[in-house]
Image (cartoon, rainbow, N blue to C red; front, top):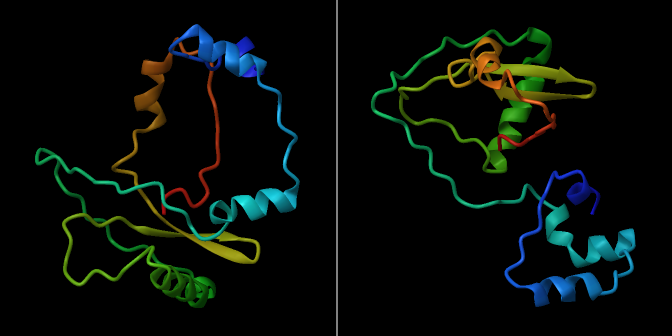
Length: 150
């Protein structure tokens, strides 16, 4: 309701009867933590899957191949363990043949863990590329897409 008042979202309903039914329906009591976890347990376990994706590479785009970055000696064991864990989960797999596209692996050290990322500098526009197109923008948002690249 607040989002509607702030005009962040708009409710589109096909007929007025549906809208009336929605406004007349009593609010359900919120689920307890245990009920929520029990009823929707599949949402809170594993990695989840939002569907199949297809990556389309345009023939006009020239592939890039970056040299590997050095992994700090202090992080090499943890990086190897993390890669093996990602392979076990089916998130990563070893390439059996050379690839036209090679991105540099980046190790990000967090307290008590590491995160393995790729440097997508050739895929991502720079701030200088983006700013002119957003010169009249009034609302910006920020979100953390932790593990969203899986």
